[in-house]
Amino acid sequence: MAESAVEREDAFKLRYEIFVEELGYNILPNEERKLIDQFDDTSHIIVAYDDGRLVGSLRSNGAYEGKLPFEDESEIKTRFKLAYPMVSTTSKIAIRKEYRSSILAYKLVSHIYQLGLEHNVLCDFITVQKDELFDFYERLGYRKYMEPFDSAECGIVTPMVLDLRDQEYLTSIKSPFIRMLRKHEGEMRVPKTAV
Image (cartoon, rainbow, N blue to C red):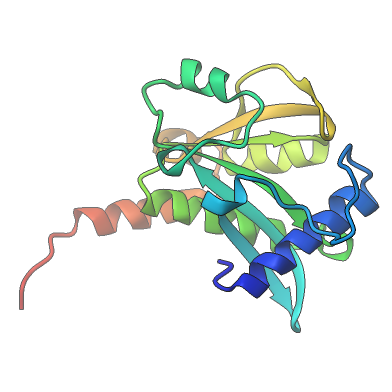
């Protein structure tokens, strides 16, 4: 987790480098070369460094902490009203090109999953742009919940949702998250004793 202002600034600069300079998203360039928005104030930013260099980051926003940074938030409120506001979104996933085929993406998303369990989140939402990313998130347990749409920022995206506590589904697809869920639920059931 980005614990210092420097780590958060590193994440904002990495986003800019990847989304604006490398991928050419529809975002206005700026002199500071940082990509930051109003949702960062209430977000949890996860960062990964390799030899002192930031190589990946993403953010999570919980509806229980503020507004969600999703173009389809009203759709989430309507379709997932039983879970709302115990929902989160994962966004601004930025990984350096040379690390995209590594285990880094899984490690970053695993931190978000653990964070969700700790905050009693029921569902996590994400929008995915590329087919290979769709497959990656599907293997983790995310499912498409509505048809793809054209995002003003980055083109056609597919909205996906993860039911963090659907043990049956996560087991059936052999999601790596199932071990984390079982461990978390086991810890929650163990009675605390005063010694």
